[in-house]
Length: 241
Image 1 (tube, rainbow, N blue to C red):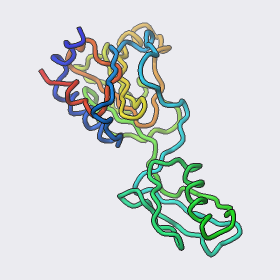
Image 2 (image 1 turned 180 degrees about the vertical axis):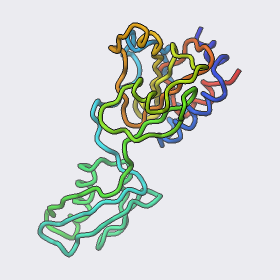
Image 3 (image 1 turned 90 degrees about the vertical axis):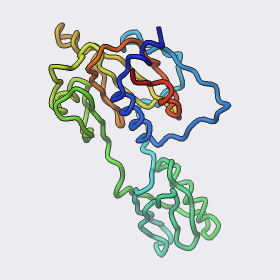
C-alpha cells in the first residue's frame, strides 16, 4: 500500500528530503492546484504518466549571487559587471533595477536588450557568466562520507556512492533512493537495486547523475513511495515511524 512508506520512512530520510526541496528553491504550488502522484517504481519499470519532466539538457538558470559581464558592441560606455542581488534584481547603468533571477542566459540577453531599448537603438550585447553555482550532487544516508560533491563529467549512481566513501554494512543496497527535480514544484523519486546490479555485474540500470540530484542510502527496508510529490507537501507525504 502507498501508506506503508509514510509509516516506514525514517525521520532522517524525511529531513533530507526537506533539505533537498529547500535547496531546489522551487516556489510552492497554489493551494487550489491539483496534486497528482504515482507509486515509485524501479527505473526499469518507470512510467511517464507524471508531471512534465525537465528537459534532458536544461540551460543554467541564474540565481542570486551569480555574477556576469555585459558588453555592448556599439556602446562600450555601458559595459558593466553585475552581481544578482538577494532579491533577484540587478541595477543596470542608466536604466535602473531589473529582475533577472530565474532566467537563462538567452533570456537574460533579451531582458537586458529590452531594458536598454528605451535609451539605445537596437543594442547589440553579449553576456559572460563569471561566477555561478557549479553543478553538484548530494549523497546521504548509510555511506562513508555523506555530503555535497562537485559533478564533473559523466557520473552514475554507483560511481557517486564510491565518491562518497562507499556504502556502510548497515546500508540497504537493494533500495537506494534517487531524488531529482522533475519540474516546478515536483520531485521525482526512483528506487534502485544497487545490490542486484553489483551481484549480477549488470550496470544497465545504473542511472546517470544530473546536477542537483540527491542519492540516499537507507538503513531500513522501504516499501512503495510516491514517485512524484509536490515539494511544498513533502512534510505531509513523508512521516517518521
